[in-house]
Image (cartoon, rainbow, N blue to C red; front, side, top):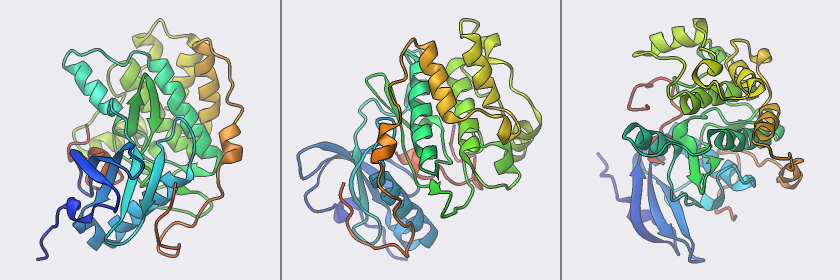
Amino acid sequence: MIPERSSSDRTPPGYRLLQVLGRGQTSLVHLAQDPRGREVALKVPLECTLRDQEAAERFANEVRLTLQFRHPHVIRGYAGSPFGARAYLALRHYAEGTLSDALAGHARGARPVESPLRLLADLASGLAYLHALGVVHQDVKPQNVYLDGGRAALGDLGSAYFTAQGGHASGSPFYMAPEIYRGDPSSPASDVYSLGVLAHEVLAGARPFQGDTYEELMAAHLNRFAPPLSAHCPELARPVARLLDLCLAKRPGDRPAADALRRALLTALGEKDEEACPPLAQAPAPRPVGRHAPVGDLPATPEAADAGSRWNPFKRRK
């Protein structure tokens, strides 16, 4: 058996490792200093990832897509290399960690998320940007939401794909839409469903569907209906509560678009809609994804690294 080398043996030139931020099944994430002196989250795939074609493809997909997008509520990638022994991805470091960290701290008595509607508006904005580009994220959940100064950004694009190019449906069982359980393709509507689950978790304090096995969760998502958010949050404006409830509609066509949700949340926050989609006009054309694409450096967290698998859903994903 080939021994596993430390990711520090494969540190990209010009980067200085500062400390380990976390480890997942596929990657090790360090706080590092990049060649420009910035503190970044440096994601380096484990050797076992590099030896597994599917895992290596997924990491390469994350590198390529992350470096293409420019939006304040999609995690920023600075540099990376998709394949080979020196594969890596340098990302903006979010010192406050993930929404999952914040929710876990709340369970231990720490202060909860200060502005849930602001957080949801940010995520709806990030999704609206991706959907307008023809991209499906596929893994919206607290572990993939990064926080900084009360604002949120959506990250971990390993499972994302351009719908025009096609991809494999996946997700995390607590957040997967009913159609994904049925084996149908992912779509922007399935991302909105996942955001609806997350909204319940943030606003009501619990996921709307529970289960101890994959089968129990599948039955819940397919057959049960979530309690209305207004029952848990009577202070929530009725139009927003209704729209968030519709995110969990069993039929994809009954769910609102991410941009409609973004606009409703901004209205509830008393803010003007100033986005007018300028980031979309500036977004680069899609690059090919996969081994058919050119390999080389592209200019510009651990739990999330294994988030795309739907076949081993209960390996500490809560």
